[in-house]
Length: 245
Image (cartoon, rainbow, N blue to C red; front, side, top):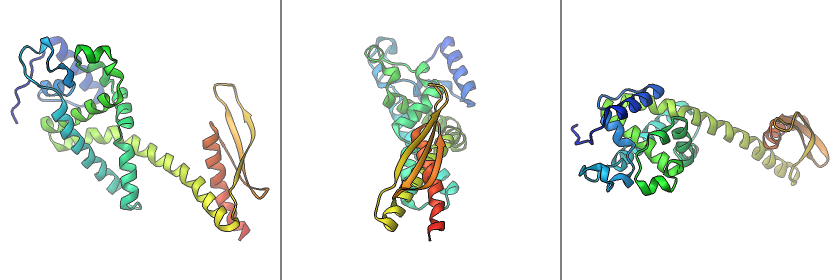
């Protein structure tokens, strides 16, 4: 594919080479990568010097689709026990603006953005939607420049940790909700969580929680916050039902 892309100077090339090195990618046409960082607010800036309305929106559109395909592929092959609805929920979390903005910040995308004067003054480099769009534009640019395999590998490195985090979070949530459902089914009551003790310094507390049903302690759990400790207690309590049967 041929593109009429804005020229970049030696200083910008050096910056972009640094980005590529830190991300483990390599563009054949570095000007395509530069375009991925160009927010639409630059289109009418004087420094564009008649380059037209070029910005990263079209790359973002393409990158969004590539990201969706890669994420769906990874979930389909890596989560064989999940149905379509469960996979869709995980995918929705993984490709959310919040998650993508977090990845963009880790890659320091904000440092390389090219913004119009007004957008710069309004804090554009910190806006989650803007960061997420730029990351998707990079995905799209890499796909055009180096093909699907290169884009797949880069996206996989970016989102695999996020898939693991979502899975871990969902797993914790499932223990507590599953235990509550069992309590209602068996006893028609809700479980009660009680803080036993809290240890450690102010900045590094450790919580000890027990869960009770009709006054009986069915499980205990620990964690660095109350939510985690409660989930661990619920997991332990689920095993106690076999004793009650």
